[in-house]
Length: 372
Image 1 (cartoon, rainbow, N blue to C red):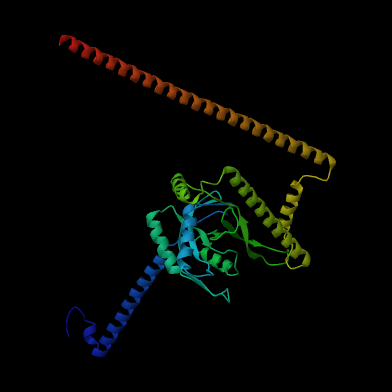
Image 2 (cartoon, one colour):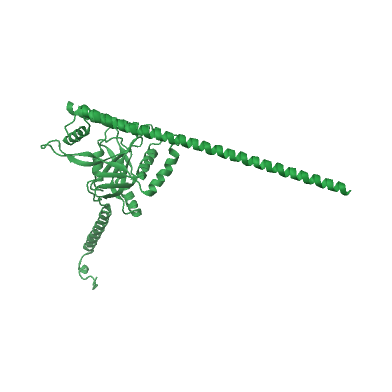
């Protein structure tokens, strides 16, 4: 006990020594836990939110559409009424244009009876995003997608969750089974709006223009896939008529949507949104004044000019086709005559050679007979 290393401890009783050791062990354990907790916090801060300006346009690549369709088919294989799926959109953002180049699926469940109850796996999202960052560091989280086909009440809550990973995320509804021809995706951003000056601002979805774009390699892949899908027996005219019908059908559905919105505003079911009213007024201002006689006359003149140009072009095309047909027939007739002439000359030559041969043989026989 008179060790020079611990002169103080030599004076303490054995119980107090054990107590001091116990306190030191507790302090060491606390320091270890604090260090482990700091390590967890550092790992948690690995996923930093992507800084983005307010998106003004969304460009979706074909790979994202194909991945969404594959995700939906895998999850709803053999199910009549398929439930929607949710995933993360990856890409880049430059001057308001969001370029969505990749995506991945995440586990998602929601209660059909109470839409406010849903489950979204954060850990899976962060792990998958970390692996995607190792492959391509340029691709960052720019938003999320679902197969809709319409906005649901819990979409705002899910959008708020994705704000942890992106400052201004984009919400894309991708229609896996579209009923109309056109772009099968609709994009939205969250924006605060106020009905009146006295009311509090509410978070609502605002539509953003979206389009489908592709790189050169993606275009080649899509063309290769469409070779087996496209029908080569369908003519160009029928395809144009089909496209016109699809465009008119889409226009009719948009007009019906505007009509239903205006009726609900008149009945008081929806509040007045002045931005929508200004845009509808702008649409009506663009329409031509067909009830004026001058406008009708100008419209008729322009229509007649267009029809006359189409009629003349059809006549010219028909005349050129007939000329080509006649030229082809003449060429075929000439080839046939040349072939017959060549065959006749060949036949005459063969007959002549045969006669000369017979004549020589006859002369040879006569000569031999005379010699005998």
